[in-house]
Image 1 (cartoon, rainbow, N blue to C red):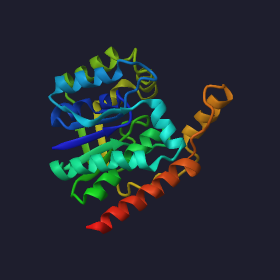
Image 2 (cartoon, rainbow, N blue to C red):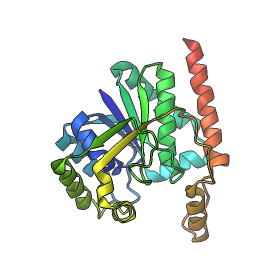
Image 3 (cartoon, rainbow, N blue to C red):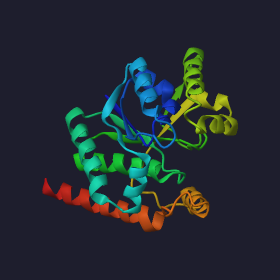
Image 4 (spheres, rainbow, N blue to C red):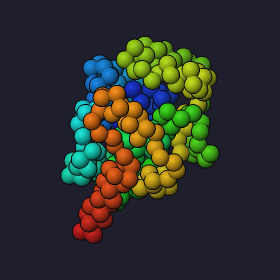
Length: 247
């Protein structure tokens, strides 16, 4: 048994071949309704066709609720999701859980890595955590431990479904143009050495995006790593440590 946790419906297409081969339980944090109301249904359809299954966390939050959770540093809500996932890890003992990589592009992507790592720590299981590139080049990892090379039929199926959903997923055309379609013949997973490490590198892009949207009067507040993400991570770590000390 394997698990996948992604921030938004549509991310699963990046691991189309891996999902088709391994048939994991797929958890999706948000419903993606800010972009298209049909995104979650398309994800569910793909999982059925691939013989995979939906996890208990499947469109749990709207996009707006997810961003509000981060802005408010709502530890209780994040912890409830972590606890639910941890209980499933204890019950099913999956060999691995894969999550969005923390690329600093979208804070909800980064949050998924925190949730997956915290759930493993809380559950005390031997499940290994891996991550995959969402907006970066699919083979951007220096030390990918799992690489799926798609055959012609698998690649064609991946491209066909991706192009079918391109109308609802505005990032598909952007990613194909940026990296080239051939880049998606390989699907790479990297082991997560430290799930808490989201404070490395330059100022995350999501802060710049947020500032631009506030200036355009589309948002009222900017989610910032230092002000929102790191306090939420630290509080989550403290809760996980408290839970661990009970046993």
